[in-house]
Length: 267
Ligand SMILES: [Zn+2]
Image 1 (tube, protein in one colour):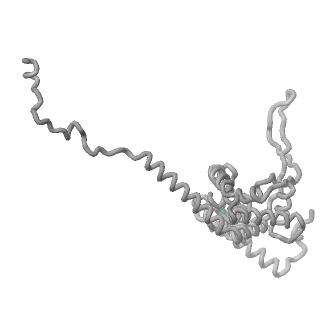
Image 2 (cartoon, rainbow, N blue to C red; image 1 turned 45 degrees about the vertical axis):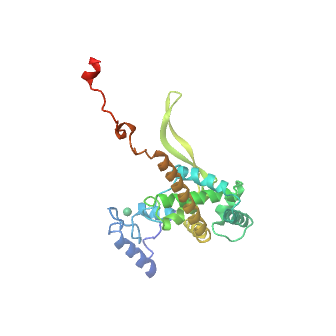
């Protein structure tokens, strides 16, 4: 592979300007508070935070795994199946079905390749709706981990794409010690590589879901919270203790004085 910039060949003025700007920028620290690494290229952040920004929309973005969403999904999925005949739920599921169909038909839609991949696995619009709704409700109930900004936009798309297994992109060799085989120490094993979903596909899909289903998702969150409040009220009512209004023992006033201990023994 030839070197990028051969020594005998001068850089063009524009390339040299970008190159020298990057060299000067890399002397500065990452702009994320608490990070001491140097900046990467002309970016205002280091390479590690750049990786997170490209994948999760924000330098401080984190991946939201199915395990994170499981407690929320266990509430959202029954709710959507209970209200499957509701016009809004039908329309939202149809939106995802149409998106899948358009992508597999070759129309220019956001995240076409990713949606066509989902269609190939036989994913339905209802499954995608459940994933997107769970992600939205998770963000509302865990704003510290998934704030309602570009991070939620990316997470919505990723939760939808994750309904089917990712695309395989070859196999890589992990050169690690894995144990002993036949008296010799075995090294290395094959691990599948998965194709990374492009940043544009993540952003475009998330923005489309927000634009079309934002109001629906807010209504679902409000309904789930109302259900939860009603349940809590019932629980609170059942757990309320009883207050004594009066006692028959203390409230009773005998007309004749009770016999004394000494008198009782004399009789
Ligand atoms: Zn950093």
